[in-house]
Length: 484
Image (cartoon, rainbow, N blue to C red; front, side):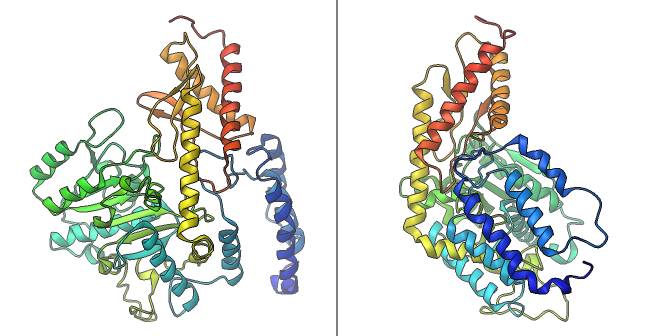
C-alpha cells in the first residue's frame, strides 16, 4: 500500500475496528490493573523503522487497537488517583468521537460555523456553571497550562498598556519586569506560562504565612504599596497537595485597591462553585480579571480541554489578534474567529465533548458528581484518621486527601523513605494508582478524586492496598531504625 486514496473505502471498517474494542475495554475499565508493567513488552510491536510500502489501513489500525488496549494506563478509570486526572463521561466520549469524525477547524467561523457556534454556547454554559458574569470573554484551550498562558498573556497586554506600550506589536523591549505576586500555592503551570511569555518562570514573588504556602495578605499588600505600579496577582483555587484555596475575595479587594490585575488559577478548584457546600471557597471569583479551569480534570471530558475567561473580552483580541494577514476574515460578535482570542490558529473542535457532557447531565448532574467526590474524599480522610499507623497531614477541603503511612517507632527520615517506596510499590502493584509528593517538608501520598466512575468501593480498595503494601514494606526493611 503506497497511497491512502486506495484505502478510502475502508474508512468505515477502520472505525468499526475501534468500535469493536469499546465494549471489552470499558467493561474491564473498573477491574483491570490500572497499570500493568507486564504488558509493556507489547509496545515493541509499535516500534521499528518507518515502513516503505506500509501495511494498509486495516492492518495498521488493528495493530494499534490491539497494542493500545493492551498497554494503556487505565487513567480514565475509577482507581487512577494521581495528577488530578478525570475520565470521560459517555456523552463526552461520544462527542469527542464526533469531533474526530467531522474533523472541523474551529479557528475561524468561515472554516466551521458549527465548531464556532458550539464553542460559543459551551463557554456560555461554563460561565453559568461557575457563576461567572455572562459578559466575560472566553476561549477554549488544550489544557490548564494553555489557559494560564492565555489569561496571563492578557494580563501582560493590560500591564504593558499601562506603560504606554502595545506589547502585541512591539514586544517587551524597554519595559520593566512585570511584577507578579502570589501565595506559596502558585502552580508550576502558571510559572511555565510566565516563562513562555518572556516574563520569567521565577519572576513570581510568593508571600506565605507558613510552610503550607497559605497566603500572607499583609505582606502582599505591603509589597503592592511599595511597588506603586501596575502588578498582577495570582490567586490559586485548589492547591494540588492538599486542595486548599487562596482567599480570592480578599485578593480581589487588594487588586481593586491597588489597581492590579487579578488572575485565578482554578484548574480543578473552580468546580467548587458547582456545589453550595464548597462555593464559599471561590467567593469573589466573579471579580477576577481572568479565570481558568481544566476540562479534562473535574469536567471529565477527554484530553485536551481547558478554558480561559477574561472580564474585559476586548483584551483577548488585543493580546492574540491583529495578524495583518489579508486572507483572514474580520470577526464580529456573531461570527467569532477564536484563533484571534488564543494562542492557537488551527484548532480541534474541542467544544463538542464539552457541549455534549453539559447538555447530557446539566447543572444538577455535575453538582451531584462533585458532591459525590467530596463525600468520597471525606470517607478516605476518615479511614486515615481512624487507622493506627496513618497520619492525615491536612484537613480534607475538596477532593484531595494528603496523608502518609507512619508506623510507630520510625524516624522522620525513615518515614519519608518508607512513603516514597510505598508510592512506587502502589504503582507497580497496579490495582490502584497514586503517587507521592512533598508537603510541609515530608513525603506524602495525595490521591485526587475527580473521576466520574469512582465509588466508595474504589476508595476502600485504595486504602486497603496502601495499608497492605505499607505493612509489607515496613516488615521487609530491617534497615529502618526502631525507636528513634
